[in-house]
View: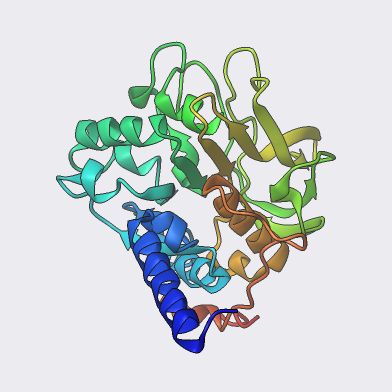
Length: 298
């Protein structure tokens, strides 16, 4: 039987070894929270619509509350982006158009993103950040975002005509599929601008693309439109696109928030809770939008 002295010595050695092991582990292994980067791009939309800065702050609040990810917000891409973001698990874009296409140093950002996605970094685009114009894509509609995220909103493009239109009532239904992003949210109806006829390549969605949410739009000639989708990429990375919300007040909808937060966690390769990511919000005015509308409170 060991003496108290031997037990104390062995415990001390074991404890020291544990400290050394922990210090030798990568930050992502020692600290389970994954790093998510929220890129807030430029916008020229009127107050109350898009509100990308406030939307970015809202997303950070919700993501940090999950304890599964730690979110950072940037409005400018650093010169050493590849190094600065070497540990980022997923990048969330919010802004007018796919932000890298309208931010300074476009080529450097796209080069950094190519490196990041090759190592499996996730890509998420919210509402207009899913958008690309003809000048951003090839004549056939090719663009890295098509591979990174599985599809995009083709606005003012020659190869495909997506549609941006505000619908007084758009009912969003979860797809009948087995996917983590579908956890914990149900059918909801909102007054918003979910883009329709989104572009998924000339032959339609690829086999690795999963439709997550659909809507029967437009009301005068209903068609089952994909308004949120996910892609499992060959590089081991994941992409998630969602074409809402246009109106800032729509962030109040818990089912919409849960879908979007689920998608971000999934692209960061974090487990999505069985009941989905459900984070209660304070008054939306807390996040300092340019316009505070009546009835914003949750």
